[in-house]
Every structure is written in structure tokens, then in C-alpha cells.
Image 1: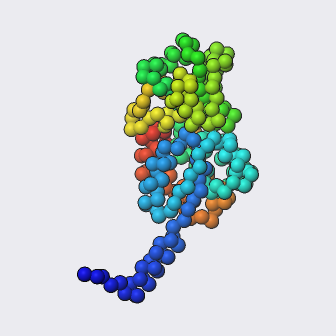
Image 2 (image 1 turned 45 degrees about the vertical axis):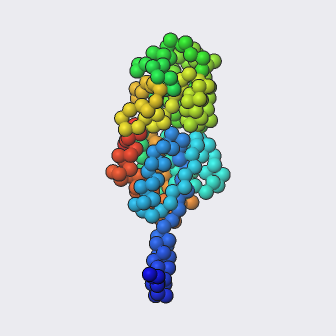
Image 3 (image 1 turned 135 degrees about the vertical axis):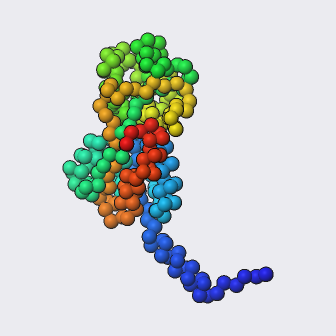
Length: 252
């Protein structure tokens, strides 16, 4: 049996699609590399719940700062620190009142080898490894935190010739995961899900060994008239997003 669709029904369908598209927008987001997995998980529910589309780019916070200052089309910035968004705010590059802390990060010393890293980080003091991976401390807050840990443990000089520096925390992780470094400082979120380390071995670095890694989000000037930008910021403040963020080892 052939179903006929009337001209009126087609007109109504077209109107409905046009109505829906009028309410759906796209938001361009600069995301700190450590938050790659959480934002990918959050994006699906955000898009389903709001109808908006999230387009993310991942990289080092310092590099994103330079790109934003040079006119990159980002509308929301999820940084790996609180100082960079505050600096952009002071420079009038953001929507007033939009900055907030969406997560507090945790640093981990990780090896892809099971049993290689003990739960007290003594492997660092034993100094039997050849390469220690960190992110660029000038561009990546997790890299800066790693140098603060080494300084607190009085291991800066001992490890100086062994450091392998990634441009961002993703590259620092890749050096370890591919075996180019026996161990490295990574974001806990890269190796952790639902209460446990997913592979290899790790020491979760005590928070008192480095400055807090408060990660701030902000709406940039390019997103001030985009409903999807505000919707994303509101969504990140909600309980549904908080549960996902915590599952990757962050504090809220």
C-alpha cells in the first residue's frame, strides 16, 4: 500500500525543520588537552539535551591564548588553568561575568608498564629510568605542576637530563604510551575512569606537592551572541555534567 503525504503535511514538516534549526546553533570550543575525553563524553549528552552542536579543538592552554589573541574563531575556552582566562578577561576578550571553574585537575605519574610505578612515587627517587615525560611547562599547566613536584621532591637537578617534553599533555601522554619514555607526568583524566586507573601503573600525586590546577571556562567575545555558547556554559555547571567530570578523576 502506497502512503500519500499531502502538500499540507510536507509544508508542516518543512516548517517544523525550519523551526528546529532556528533554535539549534553550533559552538566553537577551545579545549585544554587534558579535558579531551570528558568533553567528548559530555558533547553527546549536550547535543542531545540542547539540540546545539559542539565543535572542539584540543591543545595547550598557552597556545590557545596566542591563537585567541590572533583572532581564532573560538567562542568558548575551557582552559587548563585559571590564570589564562583571567588574563583574557582583564584584556576585555571575554563576556563579563562568564568565567567560572569547571574542574580542578589532578596530576599523576604514570607508566604504561604494570607495576612500574609504585603508589608512593618512589620510582622517581630511585632514578633508574632513562626518560621522564612532561608537558611544556610554559604552555601547559600540567607541565608546570610537574616541575613544581620535582622541585618539592628536590629532584629537579637529578631529572634534568632525562626530561622528554611534549607540546601539551596529550603529547606527554603519548611519549609514555608508545614507550618512548618509561614514565611521565600526565593528567589523571587521561588514564582514569570510574574510580580506577585503566592501564599500566600510576601514582596519584598529592595535591600539596603543586599549586592547585583550577581549570576555568569562559565565553569569549566571539560567542557573546551565540545561544549555544551560553547553553554549553550552563550545561557544564549542571549536575549531569558534574557527574561525568568527576568520573574522570576531577574535583568540582
